[in-house]
Length: 310
Length: 317
Image (tube, rainbow over all chains, first blue to last red; front, side):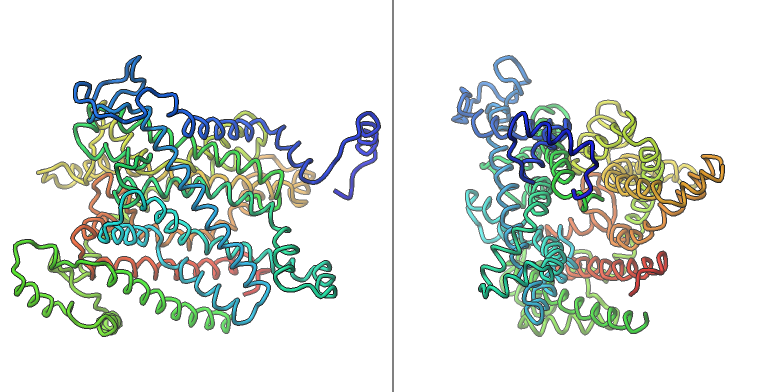
């Protein structure tokens, strides 16, 4: 930023004379992001998916999920765009309702793991010593144990304890963030260790600020760009993990639909071979949503945190 | 270096101990065991069997027994298959290895070729296409793409078998046998390659981009060297070097199988063995498998650090 060549400064000065632009780093980032066509198309798709899933079912005549024995396993038609399932329910409506759960689980588990990971990572880097040791050793331990088998065990535990279907969704969020925070804590800690030594932190010490203010008002704001990028990218991962768990019947269970447990239809040989409209649309939905999230997240990284690119 | 390695090694042992305790507790916490699922047994017989298998003892005692045996190279006895866990691992692991090693080979080959070309022609239409492909490959739900390919190539087109390692009832030998296995491997290898190739291509692309901008590349060009020589002899070598640190991280994948892919394609590997044992709560096998992966992960990380040092002596351990 410091070495702007003469000509650029001139044009910028010219622009400033014509229209007074308020410029901040965030505004510049937003401006650059808007110019990235690929990232913006990802963003538009995400917004479209959110709108379709959360508002779409409101306009569907089949939103009550009434069982219709007269119209079972019907192929896609004008009345039912994606056909109906073995209970005669409209697949498109269920797909959108499932999207609500899958997206919510993805976003919520990302939030929990980002909050956990950044607070624990920041605390470890700030206090050092024994606190650092405890937090990072636990993180190391969790990173050593293979994630998928652990998720499977936890999923099986939920089934054994007969957790009602409507609560499982929340527990699945917690499970995914339990697996997700250690990697994040490591990243945050390494950033914090360098921030901790900067001059403005000395100023904060001289001012006699308490630890809470130093941590939350002075240290964490410095890694917010990084956190935004990592958070965005981790939503995709969380959606994928949830779908794997639900597909194997260890995540969110029917009757609560998710994209993962809708694909479960493929475990039935007849549905797999003869009724592809039951399981291909949810798979495509997962795939396209995660691509959009990854593309958008990558665009965000380009503008917010170019150093991390690799 | 050697003090560092010693410290790392001790820490590794410590972490593995903690991991073993955690893994054991998780499985011990799971309600129900191998005996309780069997409807044919009477209550007395169940109690008797639990006594024989040592399931009735207190949890901590069971843990110490397990660890003690593990140190003597005995990871217990699979209850469902009535064989020692390690014997079973040895039976299944090589099938997993076959799948993993083939797909790892193709993944690396494709990633290097595509990554290098994309970097060399940065911002060309090919590069853009590769970038989109990378995002797509990184976003594939593995189980879905597996099912989709089975539906397309096995069910609809009938080009390839849907799963397993051999055709049912087949007793082919020699070249016939090899052909059959290759046919069955095709789909799972394609899926595993697809899943891995995205991030690796990206890695090689950005490495190559870094290297191309270095001064010594400019020097090589200024000397009037042919572009091919500059690219392959000077740039590629240096772009490949950091990748040897990734070899360590491949270790759990190479020997640990893939739970999802092996399950979908019904491949008789160690991941599939895990999934089967999971439904019948065959704890010795489940714990052995989880611990095995944890050990591989730790060794892999250590290996990466050492290789990193070997590749780039500027990195001090």
